Image 1 (tube, rainbow, N blue to C red):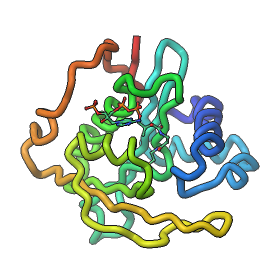
Image 2: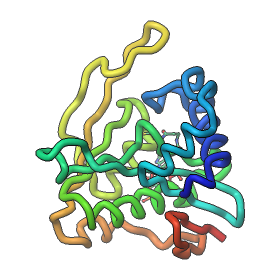
Image 3: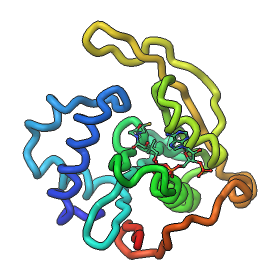
Length: 188
Ligand SMILES: CC(C)(COP(=O)(O)OP(=O)(O)OC[C@H]1O[C@@H](n2cnc3c(N)ncnc32)[C@H](O)[C@@H]1OP(=O)(O)O)[C@@H](O)C(=O)NCCC(=O)NCCS
């Protein structure tokens, strides 16, 4: 997605924070007061992918290379910060397609793709596991909101492995997918 998509990005991002507050590291209260320019800056400074059906934005996922010379071989799938599919578009392969897109993008840039996911988020854990991510750790009490603690599962995908390591788990989606430029995925 491009900075010009900031309004659509903001809308789906705030929807995600409101509807799935336990899935993300940020909060609706924090981001809903941020100006639109903050969202367009985020789109300008990082790679955010959008899945579209026509003009409708169905879901988003993000990627960033880790900071620092010694960590530049590692990238982050922004699960805790971005990954979201609208409820009425779920269970149709949109999340899978978005993560596959991030993996393909990351493969050209880093050796290892990492993410974290709240331990009781079974749909997201299954999605990542199906695409080859391996759980390598747990951060106990990583998040705390309204007095409740949440553990985070740390997952990683070694991108130096053969490309088809995860491909054998791919299914043929009922939705037809086509590539679009500017980090968008079209679902028709
Ligand atoms: C997690 C989420 C992105 C999944 O998106 P989705 O479009 O429904 O996922 P898909 O239809 O592409 O499913 C992909 C895989 O995930 C698994 N999966 C997804 N939702 C599932 C569910 N509710 N129950 C069980 N498995 C599920 C399936 O195993 C599926 O594997 P398959 O393709 O081999 O059948 C979506 O549920 C969501 O946005 N949740 C709220 C926000 C969130 O949790 N974000 C992640 C933060 S780390």
